[in-house]
Each structure stands twice: as C-alpha cells, then as structure tokens.
Amino acid sequence: MKTSIDSDLQHVITSLQGAYSDATIKGYKTDVFDFVEWCSGSGYQSFPAEPEAVSSYLDALAGKGLNPRTSERRLYAIRKFHGLMDFDDPTRASVVQLTFRKIKRASHARPQQAAALTREHLEQILKGKPETPANLRNRLIISLGFDLLARRSEIVALRDEDCNTADGGTYGFLIRRSKADPFGAGRIAFCSPRSARLLEAWWDWRGPNIAWLFFPIYNDVPVDRSLCGTTIRRAVKGAMMEIGKTKSEAKRFSGHSMRVGAAQDLLRRGQDTAGIMRAGGWKSIKVLSRYLETAEHNPWL
Image 1 (cartoon, rainbow, N blue to C red):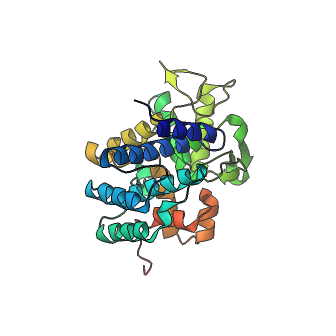
Image 2 (image 1 turned 90 degrees about the vertical axis):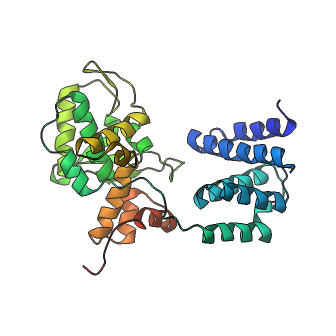
Image 3 (image 1 turned 30 degrees about the horizontal axis):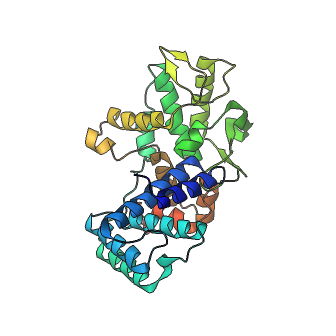
C-alpha cells in the first residue's frame, strides 16, 4: 500500500529528472526506499528521521555484512533527501558519525572494485586477427576503453563526429558527458596507434552512414543504434575467458576494468597525479585514489 511518505519521495525523485543522470536517480531511489522500508519494519520514522534511527540503520546494514562504502552511499542518499525535503539533516549528528566510524574501523576487507584489465591482458586479447565483425568491434572497444580511460557509458555514447585525426597517426575523441561532468563541458582524450589501426579496420568493415561509433551486429549486419552497455561488460568477460581466465576469475572484470587498469598502468609508468586525472577526466583526487589503491606497485623498483 502506498503511503504519504512514498508519494512525497516519488515527487522529489521526479523533480530530479533532468538535473541528474538516470543512473544517479535510480541509485538514490534504491537507497532511499531501502531506508524507508527498514524504518517501517523497525518502528522508526524515516522522513524526517531522528539520528538514532539512522544510527540503528547503519548498524543493521553492517550486520548484513554490507561493504562500508555501500553504507556510506546510503547515508549520503538519506542526507540528500532530507535536504531536498527541507528537513534537518540527522546524518551529521555525533551518534551517526561515531556509528559509521566504528563500522569502518571494524571492516578489514580490502576495497572491492572491478579487476584491472592491464596492458599485459590487453596485449594477449589483441593477439592474432579478429575472426568476426563482432570480435573486431569488441577488440576495439577494449583497446579504446583502455586508451581513453573511458567509462562504459562514455564508450557507448561515442559517435563518428566525436573523432578527429591527431598527431602520430592517432585520433582524439571528444568525451561529451560523463559522471564527473554532468553539465557536458567535455574532455578530449587520445588513443594509441594500436587503437587507431583497429579503428580504421572497423570503419573499413562497417562503411559510412552510421552515426554511432559502436553498434549492435545481427547476422554480421550493422544495426544503426547505440550499443547497450551490457554488451561491453559481456565483451570484457568473454575476452578474459578467451585468454585463459576461469569463469569465476572473469566475473571480477567489467566494463570499468579498462579504466581501472589504465589508471594503474599510468601510475606504474611514473605519471603524476595531475596527468592521470587529466587523462581520465577525474575531478577529485579522493576518487582517483580508489582506482590506484589496489595497484600492485612497488615504488622502489
């Protein structure tokens, strides 16, 4: 049965459309309604919430074994929606901050993120010649995703008009919009000669008159529409299995693995923080550090 608070929250969620990406709104909705449901079953009011309710909710999440980063994300969603509804923020209360600090200190697990698709992986994937158009496309996606340090959403959004010739027989790409660039200022990223050769082979096969750089292929025939992000995830997992990874090992890789691997590769090559941030379009050193903290990098060698 739909309650008054559900209607109020849905109104707030609707008001976010156009100001935030669909993925961000979906994440907010999931996290906020999880809190509402828990409060309903635990005898607490959700909006506006008391600090004790938020503190108990965090303890409940920890009891389920959720990663502290998931709890932190949900805490931010609770804070955000209290602000949007003009309620006092309970998440800043000392009892909530102390509870969350205890949860983080009690967690000894290493950060969970997509496994890094390294330069060594990339070289193995690109060995030999592609056997099908789909195989050629998938190789280019992985190679270009690595070079551009691109997110899955950025890869599928690329169009031919976003690509221009650059020095050394390479190409520059306009990344029009990203998670860290919601207002579409854009950034220019460059590919390697390796990706340039794959790109030209891809163009030779598919021909003109298709706006999207990447698109579905049905019975070896191009379909003129943007590619689904799920296809990229499948392409990465499939490529990892082709080079000898087991199914369980391949599960750790995703459409984000090229971005993770390329960032860590730049670190190992001695690139400074500013250079890595510029290459990948990061706005925050804190966010970049999450990509680099799992890098197996010995600075003394």
